[in-house]
Image 1 (cartoon, rainbow, N blue to C red):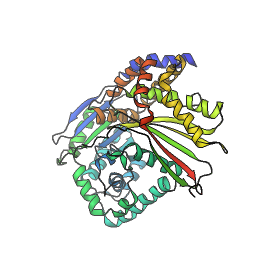
Image 2: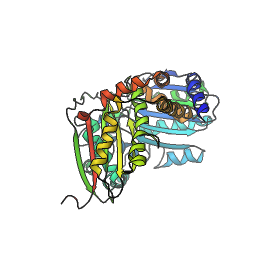
Image 3: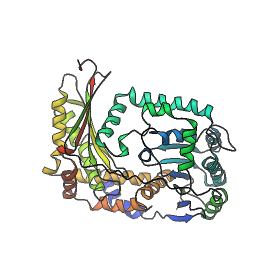
Image 4: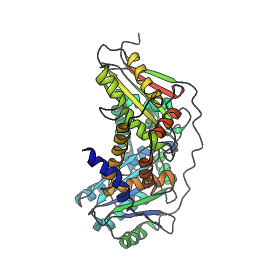
Length: 434
């Protein structure tokens, strides 16, 4: 098994560098990134919108996500949910998602359906219907989604509070789904206005990945999207998170049987040269049964039933997070202090060669698996272009992972995993607040 993983490590970058990206710009300024792969029978057609929760403001938090829902509720030539039904009837899959930095719509389907897909997407991006009746119903759906996923979910609530603690000034402070009062205050007119402001060629780019005919795709996109009128660009986000000079804590009492906590340390933007080393650190510290947090807290000391961590790089900065759920009868503060020590003193100890090798190989193997699917190739190209302006930036990251040393990882950890930068959310059983 070790030999197989090493083979991936040494061969993956050479194979992945065969990914080629071609850029076309339509007369209206709409950018199209073409990522051909004749070896796959699937085409992934993705429309990336440069607007997410970071581009919102108090009073309309979550409106990017609300608009994403409404984009499935009909357009000039198609009724509610008809877009999705047609794609599925033609053997494809369709969906969308909103995050802090973007909203992405995708259709995965046979390359021979390019005319169908382009026609459907152009119709809703140029002529979406935001009917007041359908809007009122969908707003209830979004509000219920928030209740289930955040307000009534201990883990959802913990993550929302954790990000809110970690980012106090930047728009990452508010949740992607929005605050409850803002959701209830949406109107169809507000969403329509947001759609008209943000959904235009100045804020959108298209990624087409997989097995397709380049000339057919370019011709078809010009046919359906060239009449889309230019509009204003999304205003830049000028707020920068100030330096954190001390730890922050929050406690919430909910219906849980055992207490748990989440902690976060802010990390630099997606494009930072420190991110690869921090991703390796996150793997060593929090991913899998052999990770340091799990091995110490769950297996060795048996104070936690669950423990681990991960990392979320984003456009303007992200965070490394850790978590633990204590065993019955164990002290949460003691377990938490043990976890903080593992993270914040990580740079002082030795990183074993097998730890470094395992972390790098896991990251590379994951990327290699993703490069076998048209959707994920398109996603990595889109994410790279959105964050850096370079659609092949992820390929450079592959090389960066190969070059990382234990000292690189320790230096990055020392820089970011500090007591002064600690943010902690405790989820505690109801009754303890008395």
